[in-house]
Length: 343
Image 1 (tube, rainbow, N blue to C red):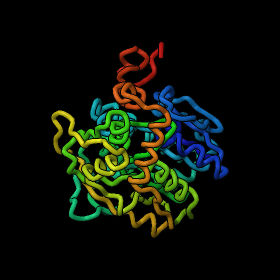
Image 2: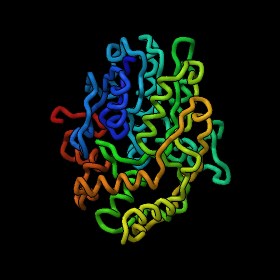
Image 3: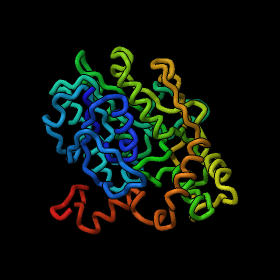
């Protein structure tokens, strides 16, 4: 297939590009390259690259594509909270415009990276499936709902959207992030000997390795149309729901001698939910293969090999919000997260 991959230069995209290419797909990457100097490992280039803000996508960017895989977004809750308007401009409005453009130029499949965060503050007595009520607690989570609803309205005989409701990601990527929970705890343990919790650790969270997120996307791209048309899929494993304190214990076991600590002012987290992942297994025959213990071991080994140190914990390279703040303070980015004339 000829695939346009938005956000190809980000955390998930840097893992997905070589997977798509290995499977024989021709990949055109579309990205604004906000994190172009934030490599941890070698980054594989797509077959073609388009440097474009998601808000400025043109029909010719998508013409001839068999599928669009849409990862591009402001990529986590704290980042989205900084400026909710920009979150909606990019994550909602630009995403809907992208889908409308894809439909007009004849793209048949549209795979949208949604999120389990749209469940928000869930009932943790039960595992939530794809029919569960939405209860987002952040602009990021709400934007995912609004895009799914818009894509549902666009779905027709020639345009098949699918909604990948990813659990909270973790794992090694060439474009590493340390601002997501498993990666963050593992990095702090390796560098400081402290498994440093930012909350009281009592909230539940479903977790999924970045390679499994990419594997699920590959499964949807390879599936018969009737199985994936206008369908939402939770992406993860039902036995990979954890309290954050449990994750801290797993990280502690992976880094002998480390100690679980709490950041100053640590409190409860409103994002608290457990999720069921049976549908993707039953519908597509695909199952996530990674577990948090296995992924944590991979993170610890990689961080030690690359010489991760305190400057990486405190600096902007692997922390998305700090990176954007740095670029704005330098004048490279405008307040609405566009490259300036000097950027």
